[in-house]
Image 1: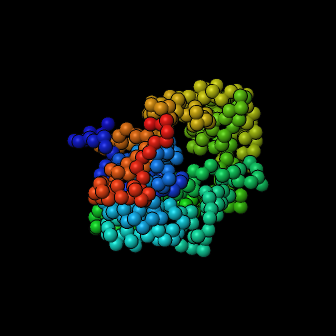
Image 2: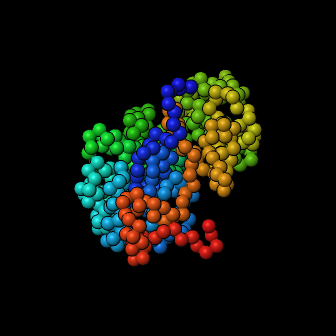
Image 3: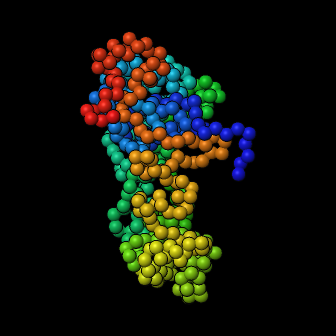
Length: 399
């Protein structure tokens, strides 16, 4: 265990203030990551939404909420005063929208030179498709991800998108968080802020770094997007079990492969003599498929538990939090209201993250946020009366 002189539970980003300009999916995910690590994230909501629950019970955790009309000049002026006290801004609008609102990076950086302005889009701020609408499936398709994960046992079958994990979250929100942190380090060292242009299509392509590095004879078959980690290898794929569940086998290394064979009673079997002989893979796969189909998923899980064969069950979203290993680590947490959510990650020895705070009702922190930005009570009252900002007004019958 790390031995440090001082440990604080406020998180490594305590003291950092981030303003998040609405958006869905990857931008709030970036805000969630920063908030998990201790940043003070202020999410801007629409005035008409004040009092409503946050749109997402997990992505909007930790963040405070202020309701401000960004289409009204006085609302923009009030928000700019909030941004004056921030270290970073996150926006997920289409290119040009923030500029039309009067909240573009030129305006914000002119007021606060050290500000880091993070922009989350699908296609990026520039390029022929920059202003074209799209979704995760479009970005990962164009970047080459979908073809790279084409089903190995049926290369003619249409690629199945990996939910929206690659474009929206891995190549989008996660990449923006990395970019913001890098730019913030630069800003703290130099006093110079900058714009971070995070495009989901760029991030999706970046996640293919290993695949492109392996595009050489014997390692990568570009025509079908198939290599040993895409399910072509019988020792790196999923298998259906007798009860309809699945297990995954990841016995890439010879030692792990040998243990797999030993557990299955296949040690010395000629069909498995040459692990990396591609010509032998179809026969290996057929044999393994037949064997795994003979027992239920949890039977296989118990049989392989504690071995080095790299065989584990495929768990559902409902089952995963209760797995002994994940439960012991606290990989998932359950809130008082019953919401199950992934815990903050990674883990820090000297600055562990604090308790996850459930999302606030929209507009719950408008008054506090504006007061911290230097707006006097009478100024806030005038903005409220004009409908430019809204304080939390819980719907009838709700707290």
